Image (cartoon, rainbow, N blue to C red; front, side, top):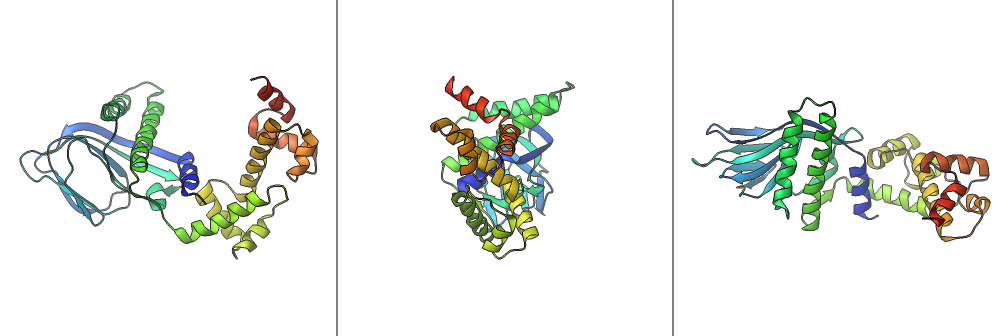
Length: 277
């Protein structure tokens, strides 16, 4: 299984909560050692010098470097001379299906952004919206926070730096299940046969699947069938009935109902829409 597919799924199910953000110069007393925060932090270094320790690794950040300090990782920081950091910073949480994102991913904590002015603008927007009384301000803060996280991951990923999925044993099991679903998408696939495939109890499979994919296996199978049916409606002249049978739907009405549930259009209307656009 391509790790990018799973990473994309994690990010699609990402839930973020903003805590606080600001721009300032660190005081001469800026120091804390060996603590493990219940939130994550971004530091966008603008000027000055200082020291960070994230896990076992030490850093001396430079201006125009963006650092991620993940929730749940032991860390330390301090000033080192009379020229402390001047930085933008943001505290937040990020979870996938209730799980801290950084328990699912190992991410290299440093990136050097390709568009530093854009990054500065994102931080400025977060701070502005966070201090706004507008009823929609919290939504704008969250949208900008999501943009900031996406921007960081995009820069780290494009630099081929460390971006590692944790718990490889479970992911290998998940890969077997996903590949089996792809290979048997035209059949009726049961939860029991998927569980048997990886020697796991069905309830354990459901928990693992929801943790990584954001939905139960049966819902995932339904979505995959509908995605395949969209492809067949687009590139073939097969009838609706034939497509339903190819994908293991013995009831055309049920197929049409499921299709409309996920797509918003009936299969016939979807085909007509595709052919006229």
